[in-house]
Length: 255
Image (cartoon, rainbow, N blue to C red; front, side, top):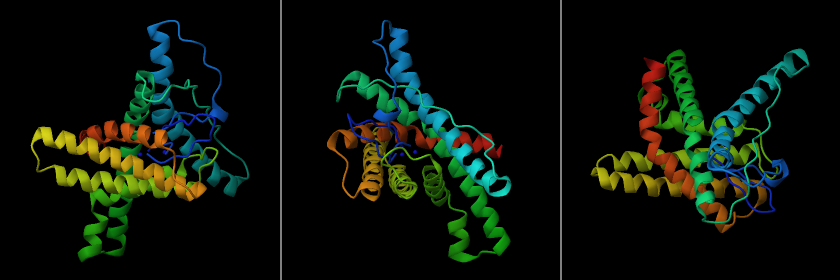
């Protein structure tokens, strides 16, 4: 909930929904000039966070994995890494700050969804190979378990930012999607209005928990209030659209 895209003034970022809902840390930011038009503002605060979370970070995770294999087998790296786009600092709870968090959160839907589909396919194949039966077979066919495993794998493979760890990111991603999947399953029986509210609350809880777990593993202490709030806002936006995105990806991938 990778789940993130956050920035903390003058401090290194720690992921949870942690980079997987975060803006680039101070060390990787470059100076962003004062926006002179609405188009500039949209590029800085809407497009750049989305491109970072939805395209550049997933690509860098893939490149890092491919390079790990190529270094082992051939002693060289095959793919270069891309630099994150600059996102200007924004004051807490301002419209710009909110837009950055929501944009980064929504953009992570596709990488997380694809990771869940990949994990689900691997789990089902493994079940077939070993002839799994009973509870084990049901677990290996579970879409919820696949999404949780996929999130853990994706966040664990992401290139850590300063202050992050692969382990913390993986545990944070698994925590977030455990809460998302369980909460969304319960909310299916509610009325449309109640379902929306429940998904928003579930998203806030899951993303905040992800950020907390990742931060605890990496630094031994909880993140600051501003980080948790932005994680929650991004997580709420992402989880609201998560079920529909999962269905759409399922149709696109499975046919």
